[in-house]
Length: 268
Ligand code: NAI
Image (cartoon, rainbow, N blue to C red; front, side):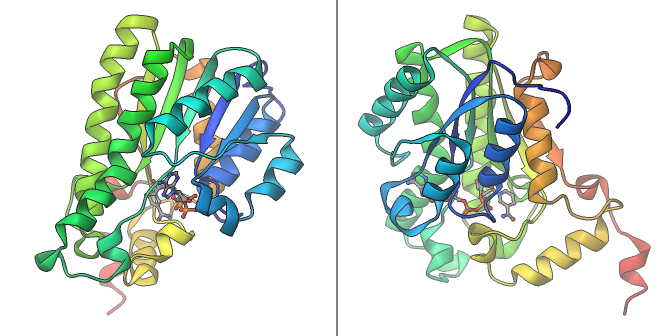
């Protein structure tokens, strides 16, 4: 990246599991753009994933935190401010997991204990991250916060199951915190609604390949990949996007505005 868009900025990136993860690409791009970052993931993911390799390459400290655990989140912010030597200028929440999807429960027969867990990990964790940052006054003036979401929050994609409700809740938390943090310290909070992307979380959705191909053909620009999502996140963390807040921003090659693409009809 020729412009050091994030020079001098300090960020926390949640959710890099392996080199397919969207957060992995975001971490690489942010570093390229001149930022200093810490990386975090759930302790179990640190054992199973490859984040150590990323941390070593980017010279980024890895701080374990289960995003549903307030104590661990508090330690994460404290440690990040210590390691990065100051308040945090940007945060990426790139976390999602549905127990019912994983266990292939039909939408009309969901297990509610599992649903609670799915909502906690995929949506309430965002509120917990923001509330922890608020209480510690850990974010700098004009900081930028992003969470990744999917269009199933607005439209029905049956196999996305309870994750649709999780994403709707996540987007609503982002808008509400956008008000509180914007009024307090001009901090902006947005969600990015990303195209289907081949990652561990993506592949967990039933029929993902069909889903992926359909969206790719429907979108005039085709599906947005993880790298272009990382570029967009970099712009959203930079001062260039300083007046954008409380938005759900579609990063989907035009999918969200399409009704039908004749090239799909011509296939049959
Ligand atoms: P991924 O599987 O690489 O990332 C999901 C991350 O969530 C993993 O790193 C996992 O360890 C982390 N995580 C799970 N439980 C956690 C917990 N309790 N505490 C902390 N971290 C936890 O997959 P991907 O696709 O990069 O997902 C990132 C985000 O993008 C998710 O919010 C996902 O819903 C969203 N998204 C993904 C799309 C796709 O097609 N892959 C499309 C649109 C949005």
